[in-house]
Image (tube, rainbow over all chains, first blue to last red; front, side, top):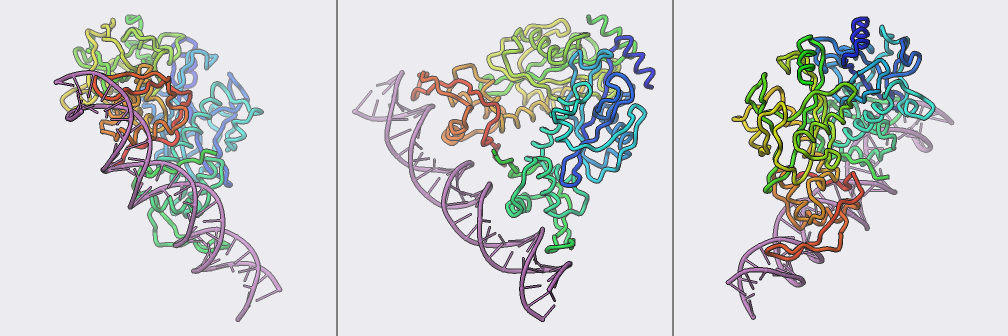
Amino acid sequence: MTNKAVAMLRARALTVTVDLAIFTVRQHELQTLLVRRGNEPFRGVLALPGGFVRPGEGLDDAAVRELSEETGVNGRKLHLEQLQAYGAPDRDPRGRVITVAYLALGHGLPAPQAGTDAQAADWIPVASALSSNVRLAFDHEAILRDALERARSKLEYTTVAAAFCPEPFTVADLRHVYEAVWAAPLDPSNFRRKVTRATGFIVPTGQFRTPEIGRPAPLYRRGNSQVLFPPLLRSVA
Amino acid sequence: MTNKAVAMLRARALTVTVDLAIFTVRQHELQTLLVRRGNEPFRGVLALPGGFVRPGEGLDDAAVRELSEETGVNGRKLHLEQLQAYGAPDRDPRGRVITVAYLALGHGLPAPQAGTDAQAADWIPVASALSSNVRLAFDHEAILRDALERARSKLEYTTVAAAFCPEPFTVADLRHVYEAVWAAPLDPSNFRRKVTRATGFIVPTGQFRTPEIGRPAPLYRRGNSQVLFPPLLRSVA
DNA sequence: CATACTAAAGGTCGACTTGACTCAAACGAT
DNA sequence: ATCGTTTGAGTCAAGTCGACCTTTAGTATG
């Protein structure tokens, strides 16, 4: 398949790939999965996981497949949405390659397995990946920036943040997600007031979780609402 | 170019097109530009304007070019943004065609010119185009729905609505845009309060426009702000 | 057993925003 | 001068916001 794809590239035909910005929250920090490329171009450089769209394969299907191949996670069990297409003519030195970028949000994602095209893959803090001393292959830095901004704004007016939390979860778990993605602390009391007021965001299970220290926290499950009203706006600071 | 593209299609190679959902406000109504297809497939059926991405041509460049070809409007003078890619394997009966959809917002767009691939093109109310008794080619109805929803939500938290208004414009002009896109009436007084309070949305020119009847209205220009804070949320009704 | 510590949950407060509404101001037409 | 129409300013109650404080419920420690 790789040989055939490269042959198509060499023939100057137009090819389409999918690339994934996979986000998860670990240790109160937003992390993304990056692979170190094993082949030219950009051999040894960090890149978003991805690959060629196969003939007869839908874009979403290709994203699910790549997600499964790179992380071993069933892509239909976490939030996956298309970001947009990137198609600058010179974005890939091999020829004309248009990529469709996807945004994936998950929780407890396992340590990744090295794929066929990747020497190694690992979780890396998003702040590090976007810092000036890390270079990403192709236009993946721009894609990652767009994905981060999309994720941040999605948290404002949708309930996707719950996709980061393994069920059942506490209000504090949910708040840690917002704090990690927005990279800003939130007032625990005000946060709970807004989250519990919004209908269909979280529903109580009746169960409690007793932490090592502190008062036990009620456990919640995801509600059936996709949109969040009123929205949880980021502070203007 | 069309011959070459069709040849590529016949060879079962993967091709990429751009399709445009172009919105404008005419007679207090949101309208979109649709073409009646002159070629198979879907000959005689309404479709979004669009065409093949040329070799070495960027996606945005292709969208600008198609916009210019179909409407005669310089695409760089109005708001144009990518919606997303659509790539279901069976979305085009000719073979594997992935399309990148764009959303264009403009004002005073001229009567369109029939392109090479289109018998005729005309402005059609969006409500009619999405009604059950109008069928669109390919998956263009889904694309149009997504574009409408994108436009509606963009009005909430960005200042793109001003892109619909020829400069200079009045607050009422701007309000008519919101009313047309959201298909809901707005309170004139409350609308002006929010619009003038948001910094960088509109700036007064000092000029006035005297209508046929009623009090003269101050004229405004677009401000330099892209985001709208606080956002102008749609009512939950 | 009492106390300290921690986190959850709930309440208070002023400042601000919202939608619904009223009323004055500024024009043309009659 | 009066009317109709549109703009624009203001009012008011209800709600939301961030900031802050207090109470509650658990563990750990003396």
